[in-house]
Image: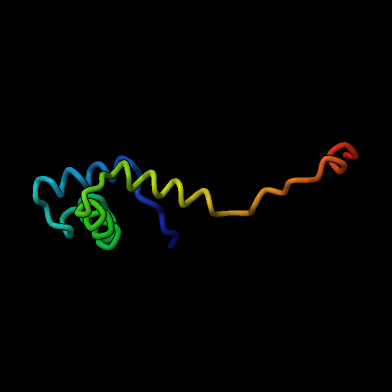
Length: 80
């Protein structure tokens, strides 16, 4: 089973559900997710940050994944 990251929409729902006092277990059931990602977001929000901050951090960290770009020296670019 592949792990899929929380979407911005799901993060918004999590924030809303936590604000109205729903338990993490109920939120996980409503979204069809496991409890751990919900707890991660809950603890992040408890530090005073927003779901937008959470999503931006995820996107920033994602830029470090994958193969690095290869930059050729100018003489090799001219050769090609």
